[in-house]
Length: 189
Image (cartoon, rainbow, N blue to C red):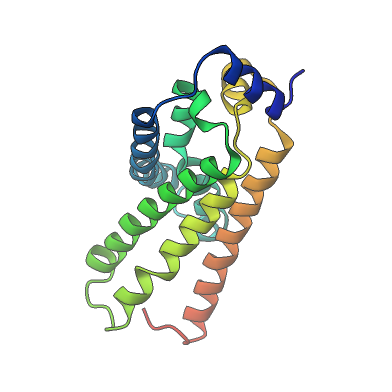
């Protein structure tokens, strides 16, 4: 069985590396994936039944799985364009930032239109950064084996699993802390 480095080297010798238009497509697809992730997480979280634990556990699990949907698609369509681990993680961070910006806009303009003056500045910085950072961590675990896992039922790579759980844990910790601080009266949303 080939490891990631050997497989990347093998693919690089078979044909020339992708050109910049391919990278533009990959970047755009990853950013659109952040938008698709918000739609998918909305549906997924509604199907979970709206239990209290969804905020703490369900939302992070669903969101961290769906935010990189554009990167998953790019791994299938242009696997040779995503041979660099940092590149994949940065693409996921971009998707997470798009997700966070859309989610923040929904919170500021729909869920809490009568918010305090400080709320938009907070909402468009801290949660957006958290979404980008958690997605970056998840992206550190993605590689060419992900489509193999989905399509052929191979074993989920440990690195993908571990980084996914690390991103989910970061997200769940933030959500829990935000709720605790709200109930403690530190934040008045």
